[in-house]
Image 1 (cartoon, rainbow, N blue to C red):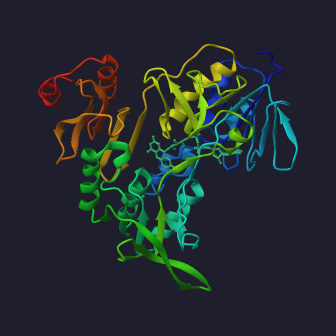
Image 2 (tube, rainbow, N blue to C red):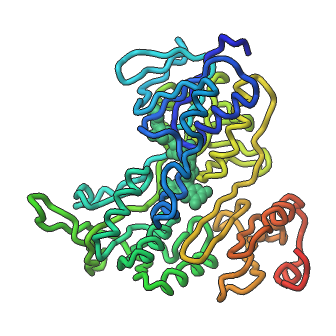
Image 3 (cartoon, rainbow, N blue to C red):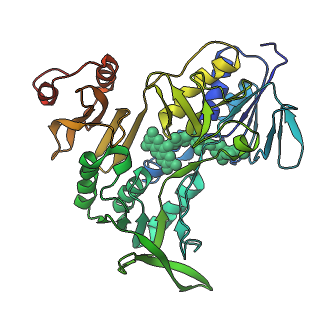
Length: 410
Ligand SMILES: Cc1cc2nc3c(=O)[nH]c(=O)nc-3n(C[C@H](O)[C@H](O)[C@H](O)COP(=O)(O)OP(=O)(O)OC[C@H]3O[C@@H](n4cnc5c(N)ncnc54)[C@H](O)[C@@H]3O)c2cc1C
């Protein structure tokens, strides 16, 4: 690429920042403009429901790069700026004031937005979602004054917020439609581990329950939420409600530009979209994964961290493919876990546990019907991720009894 080349990154999360880094690490000396709708430099989101919410980390601790880094590396950062359109014919992006910015190569890293619930009462001012630093700060203030929090959804964010709220002394009720927390991610066997964990911390967990309405009352001249009415008519009283029912990828820009989209923006193994001058990374990228041989979209930190190196190479005309297995982590109370691999509930055959589930110190393996390891989750057991990866990569049948035997080496 010549030094006149203009690269534009739309988005201001981890993926956008890592892409800017990767371009400069590859000695790209053209212009790089990063355009973010947020008012802050790109930051990592996992602490928003963990260390930040627990008062242990400030924004500066998880800001990806300080302002000086962008200045030193001649990255133009435009904050508080939402790109409204991409014109692939003129190769420009449109800014809110109607002006346009030309690009030679474009990266889309627009991330996700929390899903809302189209329920009566959901627009009350004390009904919250969690995606940004502002949302997390709002919850911190809330923990200082609310006595009872109702959380709709027992996914990762709902459970992590529940753990932080309990640490702050807030009474928590979680209402979940499925029969176990995290059912879609982990399946019933390991979902139960998280149900037990939260019950052990006095969370009132209502599983297999529908929310019919967010109930409201008059408060300070407006209608404020005061609880949930469930499908069976029962009432969960609360001072505030958190909706944590997942996120939806921000693919409108790509779709309106005529790029191929499905659940996410479709990308090939090199993270190129259906337009060779445009890549997509992070939460929005629905990739044809070379190792898994299927299309997947992964809404996790590790994807946003690692995909940009490949996308940067692709933008620079080099050959690179993204082949890493999905990886994610969570921290709740004194449970820390890492999950590596891909085992969709309904597609795995059995879960083999190595260690002590009761003590929450174990590794769980998801096996297919041929006893091949699809995924592994280490709970309060560390430094085994590489070993889990090797077992998945080997693609060879394992002896489940030996796998479960902590006396046998992994
Ligand atoms: C509270 C919370 C906790 C999490 N915890 C974990 C965890 O423990 N482990 C884990 O693996 N993952 C976790 N995740 C998921 C992880 O943070 C995401 O997968 C990751 O943030 C995705 O990065 P991204 O850069 O693709 O998107 P995002 O982080 O969503 O960033 C997208 C950015 O693009 C901006 N943008 C969108 N549209 C436009 C536009 N048109 N113009 C300009 N800018 C735009 C947005 O404002 C935003 O700044 C968590 C997420 C949240 C919200």
